[in-house]
Amino acid sequence: MPLWQGVWGEPVDTPSPAPTDTCPVCGMFVTKYPDWIATVLYRDGHAHHFDGAKDLFKYLLDLGKWAPGHRAEDIALIGVTEYYGMTRIDARGAWYVVGSDVLGPMGHELIPLASRDDAEEFLRDHAGKGILRFDAVTLELLGDLDDGRLDQVRMEPRMP
Image (cartoon, rainbow, N blue to C red; front, side, top):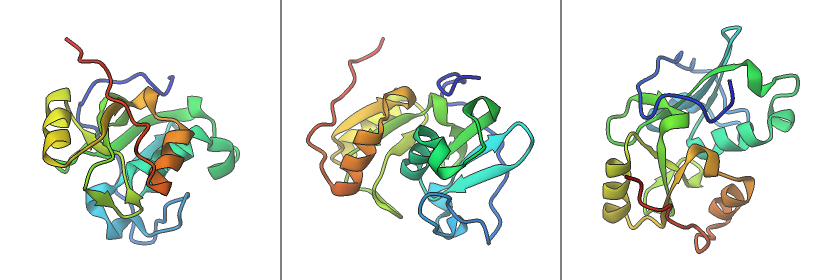
């Protein structure tokens, strides 16, 4: 299944990380940050957990670096923790606010929300710079977030 397919904003059932599970990108223990957990579940049942959507995307966009031997086509499900409901939703269907005043465990973060309306509300309430969909996230954007360069984030056009 291509990375961009999925049901928009739908809850997903992903395994919970164990206390010893670390983010494959930064090495932090993910259970210390339950409000930020993201998970990649593979078809064979094993999972990789992350301490935020930003590291999740770094992993997905450079799978060969972070998970040698793993293939995107073997991914069954990608879940992110939705900001308002604190529930796991399909990452492919989430709306991501960038450049807000809400920081995650690794600093500037992509804030996952279940709907465009929720994303717009969060953007207003938390001084966000833009709203992106799953397939609009790039390694360049992630680097800009890491470096605090938020001036190039653009809003996507209003969808009906």
